[in-house]
Length: 173
Image (cartoon, rainbow, N blue to C red; front, side):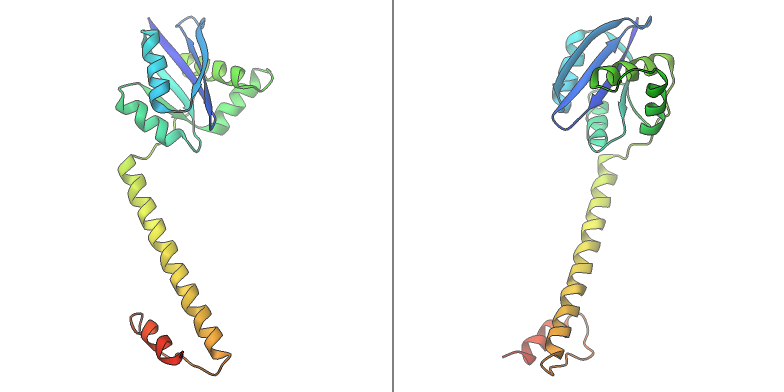
């Protein structure tokens, strides 16, 4: 018998709900929002999982990649779609209701999956973004120095990227 899981993730704790094929709640627990803790909890229940649902959010890429590495059938779902489905249930918004709702949506197949980037692609994107940021900041500093020196009638002039530092040192005592 397949079981389905709903995870409502926050920064410190994640609410976990496991339901069976009929929709009966097997367990509901809160666990630290760490992949190892979540995997340990799910493995301790010792059942076969059909789908594990987690809403897209700041921690979802990290958790999804880690849970996939552990061999769990995790699916990251579109947040707004899940919100509208949970709102249709007309229950008060809480971690407990959200985890149950996500688990039930996994059970009946009412979800819209989103693509989760691999760790390698996330690292490449982070490096490119950081490189662009550093380049922009360097240009900002260079422009600020040129403007400051101009106030004292010291003109850097046209120099290449490599020659800027030498030219500024030459102009300043």
